[in-house]
Structures are given as structure tokens and as C-alpha cells.
Amino acid sequence: MQIGVLAIQGDVREHQRHLMALGCEVPLVRRVADLEGVQGLIMPGGESTAIGLLMQEEGLLDDLRARIARGFPVYGTCAGLILLARDVEGPPPPRVGVMDITANRNAYGRQVASFEAALDIPAVGDAPFTAVFIRAPRIERMGPGVAPLAFLHGQAVMAEEGPLLVSAFHPELTADDRVHRYFVEKVRNAHYRPES
Ligand code: GLN
Image (cartoon, rainbow, N blue to C red):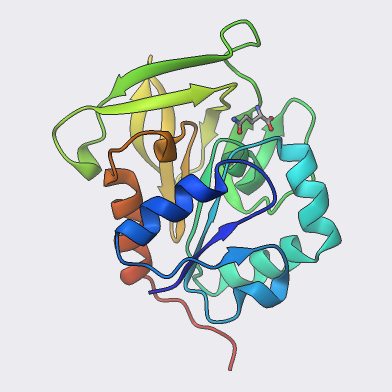
């Protein structure tokens, strides 16, 4: 299975390593041509405005919107969550913008830049998942088609809608591969119809 990692900013290598350990081929994606033959994509964290502007220049925003409409699975972590969100509180970056959520940028404030939390994520198993949050966004609103997968202090921090998965935290920074495994399964079960 080929799952790409958007390689503009962030923990590109860490995501790549997790996916490779799960048996995937993992091309790095910087332009539309790199998506040829790819069955799913991870969008790492970073700075969403910088990433969104570069994606726009490369035509990746329009291309991904069209692919997602045909069932292409995308997992956005942190800045990637902001880039998938239809609505954004805080300065809105150029983005894919197709998931029916409102993301609040830097919801946890700049002082509390980074923290860890043990999350219950029933979809990936019973044991708590050590989640690393770095200037994390928060999901303020979820549309009726969105399923929350994990909460922190009563607010959703991981969710999915159709082929889309988002988390406010960084699963690539821990050795626990269960969230990546969950996405690999999602790609395996997806009904993506590449253009013929
Ligand atoms: N808060 C950042 C943004 O708005 C995202 C932080 C991250 O990806 N670690 O882009």
C-alpha cells in the first residue's frame, strides 16, 4: 500500500517511519505529480498558513479537494487538522477546507505551548494513548456527519468524517503506532475512485 506524507513542513520523517514500519510504501509529496499511485495522505503539523500557501502555489489544494470528493483518505494532524477544516477561528489559512468542523487555531494559548495527555481512544484500543499537543488547535464545532474519536476536557481532539481523519495531537512523536495503524486500516477499507 502507498500512503504519502506531505513534505512541506513538520514531522515528515517521523510519520514516514511509522507508516513504513506498518509495511507501507511512503512517497514524500510536494507537488500534484507526487500523488500518482498514492492511496492516502498524511498532512503533518507545522504552521498552517505557511503550509497552506505553498500547497496553493503547487495546486495541491484544488487537487486534494477533487480527490477527497472521490473518496481519497487524508489524515491531518495539528496544522493538518486546520488545513482540512471548513471553518477556522483565528487567522484562516488557505486550505483544503472540506471537513465539516470549526478549528480554533492555538486554542490552548501560547503559554501552554506544549503538553502531554493520556487519552482514551476506544477506536484504537483500551489502553490510554499518550498524546503530545504542540500549540494545538481544538475542534470547536462538528457537523452531523463528523464522528468524534477522542476528547480532552470534554472537547473533541480527534475525529473523522468519511475518508477524512484529524487529530489535534502528534501521534508520530511517540512509539505507539496505534493511530497510524488506524489510518492504514482506513486507507485499506476506503472506496477511492482514482480518475481513469
Ligand atoms: N497552531 C499551529 C497553526 O496554527 C499548528 C501547530 C502545530 O501544527 N503543531 O498552524
